[in-house]
Image (cartoon, rainbow, N blue to C red):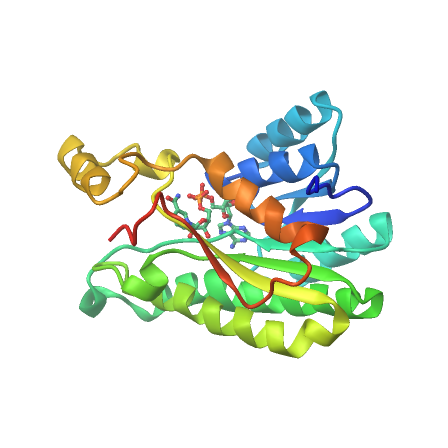
Length: 250
Ligand SMILES: NC(=O)c1ccc[n+]([C@@H]2O[C@H](COP(=O)([O-])OP(=O)(O)OC[C@H]3O[C@@H](n4cnc5c(N)ncnc54)[C@H](OP(=O)(O)O)[C@@H]3O)[C@@H](O)[C@H]2O)c1
């Protein structure tokens, strides 16, 4: 058992972000060729590609707004043109829009659902067409504890993430016969720049709710993704893997 991903092509959306960049680096260290997707932050994507290449891995930066249909088409067609197959899709790109529910506007709903759900579903549909032809695929959706526990002032975010669970389980049922697995990874509170602005008091409160007494590291989420992407996880589909340090977090 080595959880290697040699001869596999992976797309990690939002790989210019805190968790996505770690997932890209970890999948590449398992020998996958990784498409390091970004929307606006090309500099960070280039840094991730350089890091992977300096470790002897294979990576390509690829851009696109997943809320835009032309961008989604071009992401998938570039990968298929260059690499022939797409074996692993990690749907990691995501946005949040904090605020009390009654203050949320139509545009806020469009923003959060357009990215976290509709963009993700449309991109996944394009990827699945190729996976079905290949009779091989790994779909890994990055959710949040807010999906099942709820989170005040994060109603749109938690509702959009909750929908991912239904999507993921339904895909597991529909695609199992094609040797395609579909799973969810649920990171707890992870040390990313999202935490830069929280007060010491809030930090202490969160840590007091985590049995392991600390926030998670992006690599710790990435190792769960690597496992679910591996051949060793071939019989695991429709599952939810929590990476929360032992607790429900909220
Ligand atoms: N951080 C945590 O503690 C935590 C906990 C639970 C779950 N999560 C989930 O884990 C995932 C990654 O979180 P993170 O903290 O690493 O986020 P992050 O650093 O804010 O990164 C978000 C990523 O999504 C991309 N993105 C945003 N809108 C996009 C769009 N319209 N089209 C394409 N890409 C888009 C961004 O691209 P650019 O920057 O290039 O524009 C960026 O790469 C998210 O799904 C989040 O909900 C995070």
